Image (cartoon, rainbow, N blue to C red; front, side):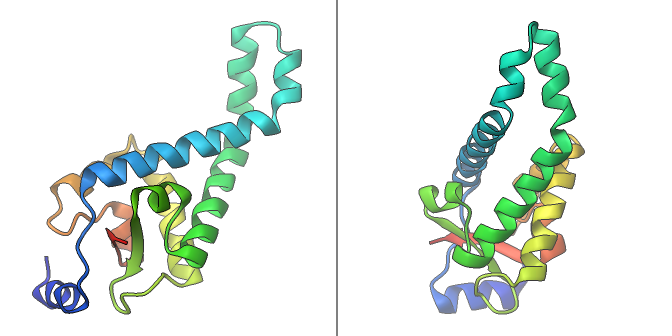
Length: 149
């Protein structure tokens, strides 16, 4: 990690969140988003007669699901510095330059690259495991860090 960033974190008493907390927060958020999708398309599900029809129906709503995730992550990171999963795990997102909650553009960038990391077989998330500052692709592009709250 950059020594200047490390010094700033130390000076402010901030500690990088561990990967385990981030993984649990990710799953909490995914469960919440999936639950919202199921509620949104429950009427259509009730008309599906086979498992294949349900899979096709779910796939048809994938663009809406991805947009819902981008809006969810952008809104919560701007407002609270964390999604509901991160709040539950007591971690938050900060901009590297300000050590504060990310701006709108920063949060939007982070949310979009979060989806891109998912599309590319979660490689962007795996990057966070080997990175010294635990930055995933979406953290790197948005210039953010995830710290303990």
